[in-house]
Image (cartoon, rainbow over the protein chains, first blue to last red):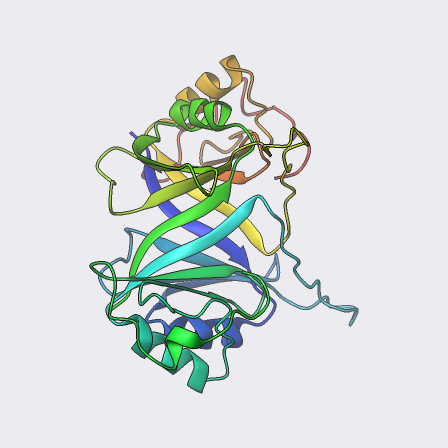
Amino acid sequence: MAKYLHSMIRVSDLDATLDFFKLIGVEEVRRKEFEQGRFTLVFLAAPGQEDVAEVELTYNWPPEDGSEAESYDGGRNFGHLAYQVDDIYATCQTLADAGVTINRPPRDGHMAFIRTPDGISIELLQKDGSLEPQEPWASMENVGSW
Amino acid sequence: MAKYLHSMIRVSDLDATLDFFKLIGVEEVRRKEFEQGRFTLVFLAAPGQEDVAEVELTYNWPPEDGSEAESYDGGRNFGHLAYQVDDIYATCQTLADAGVTINRPPRDGHMAFIRTPDGISIELLQKDGSLEPQEPWASMENVGSW
C-alpha cells in the first residue's frame, strides 16, 4: 500500500514563501533544521491536513563562502499545486492586497492561478463549483503565464 | 479554509505514466477528456486517497497538423512527489524488474528516488522508518540525479 506524503518545492526565501502560503490558508506544521547539510525543511498543510497532504519546502542555506545562493527556475514537466478554497474572490482579494499578482483572475468564479515567490504555479478552485461572476474579477485580464 | 486537492504534472505518454505509477501502487481514479481543448486529465491516487491527495496528469494531444508534440523538461523550483510504501525493497524490486532506473537506491532501508517517464522525481519512504540494510541495495550505487 502506497500513501501520498507531500510535494517538495525548493524555496530561495523561506519567510516570503511562508507568508505567501499563509495568504491562502496553508501554514507551517513542522520544521527540521539540518546544520551539517545546511538546509531547512518546513512542512506546510491546510487546516486538518497535517500528515494527510503536505507541501515540503526545502530551503538551502546560503553558501558559507559567501557566493551567491542558487535561484530556482521552473520546468514544463511540473504543472501546479491545486487547493480548494471557500471563497475564491475573498482569497484572491487577500492575495492582491498583499501584492501577489493574480496571473489568471477568477473571471468565472471557479478557477484562479497565482505563483509562489519561486514561480511554482498554484491553482485555486472554488469549493462546490463556482460563484456568480462578479466584478472586478469578471473583466480582469490575465497577467503573464501560470 | 483551504484544502489540498492535487499536484499536476504534464505527461508526454499517458500509458507509460500510468504503468509507472501502478508499479508504486498509485492508480487512476478518474478521467476527463476535453475534445475541444485536445487534452486529457487523469487523476491518480493511492488506495483510499481519492479526493484526499491526488496527482493530476495532463496529457496534451499531439498537434492536429502533425507537428511534433511538446516534450517536457524539468526545473529546479519543483523538487519531487513523496510516497510512503510498506516495503521499500519490494517496491524498488518491482520497479527495477519493470526497467525503471533506481536513481537513489534504498541503501539505508529508508529512502529511494526514481523518476517518472517525463523526469518528475519521486521519493519513496519506508513506512515506520527504516528496514534493516540489505543487499543488493546496501551497496548499490546512485545513477544520475533525482
